[in-house]
Picture 1 (cartoon, helix red, strand yellow):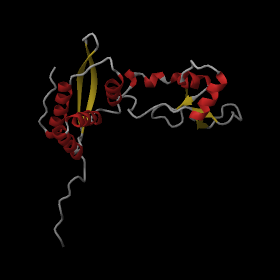
Picture 2 (cartoon, rainbow, N blue to C red; picture 1 turned 90 degrees about the horizontal axis):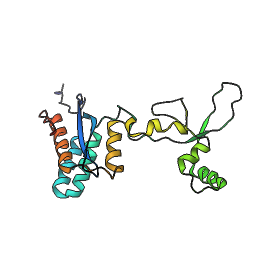
Picture 3 (tube, helix red, strand yellow; picture 1 turned 60 degrees about the vertical axis):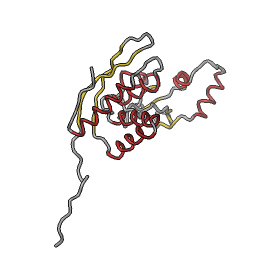
Length: 203
């Protein structure tokens, strides 16, 4: 009988869970702190690519570093980062009182046709969908449908997971600035967590 071999990667260790705050600055140089939760279980290959990119192509390395940080943030403490409300409409009428209609996606062609009928160039996409009586399924729901006008309780910045809020602040808030040294310190802190040598981000 042959000797059993050692298998690496057959099981995953528990993730390191930590809370932290990151300081942003607005255009008046006022400090604004945002709180996040990290769930650190770093992919070794991804970490190697990040470190290699930072050495060989600083610009690409910075982008990879931001992406690696994002993947280590909790995506379950709020609305997930990849979720977006998808507009639907009932495909049938209620045949009997209390029956649930079936829903079908509203296409861009449907929106364009409805907009042409409105003859109102000032109506934006969300208002158009509300006028169309659109519905959406909230995150994590399988049977619940809500009217389009309720979407803001899920799309609001505060409703997002740590990962969703990070992406929102980095990608969609030109009025806020974040120091590259601070993101680098956060990245190094995350590496320390998985390596067993954590160091707190500077306060």
